[in-house]
Length: 283
Image (cartoon, rainbow, N blue to C red):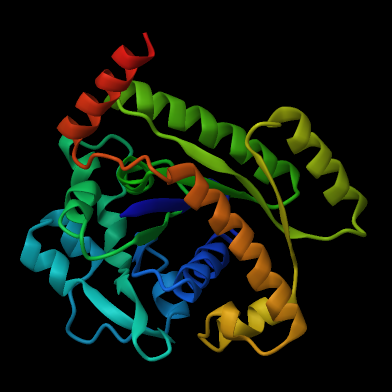
């Protein structure tokens, strides 16, 4: 099971839209896919047309990640592939804000990882939609992930947020003594005709040449239409939709290549042991 966090420390950059696009790419490839909506705004849950009914939510999971609670917090979405495979959702809740504290107890940072460890054989891919903050919810997601994808729009504040996120990942890695690995920086809502956007892209290339992905996601109506209809972009019947789907495929390829053949241990103790073993091997 491979886990990807989709993250940004600046709101309004289309983070949830990217998470939905990657879930669409995973579904189109026949992957058993779970999305985790850990953002208190719960836009991911809404975008997947989920009716939680009497289901528990990710807030319950963070309080008590027992097998029964985890199972009851997951529901099927309206997204299906050939009626045989669907994207499942660990349901979001505004109540998760109660757990988004700036100075959590160390053991509370591993609640989501503990929950996902119970699902190791149930899914091929897990995509986590993080809140735009650096408190405990985001750190829970990062520690549970094989890679973290940072989303940035070509603006001054978003570029600044990338630097803060990369620094925070390094600090979390040192604090918890486990690797927290960025997949890269993905530019979203790019407009070719914008001088400002071109300037910010150039700035990102200079500041983060190793992390910046080649893909540039443009602003397209087809993506908003698919999202508004609660449909995966890979099923949207337009040429524009096909182009967007192909770009999400490219990003998903980068993720698969990064984690291929490198399964990650779950749990704090397992991750620390694996990190120490890797360090000894490198020496």
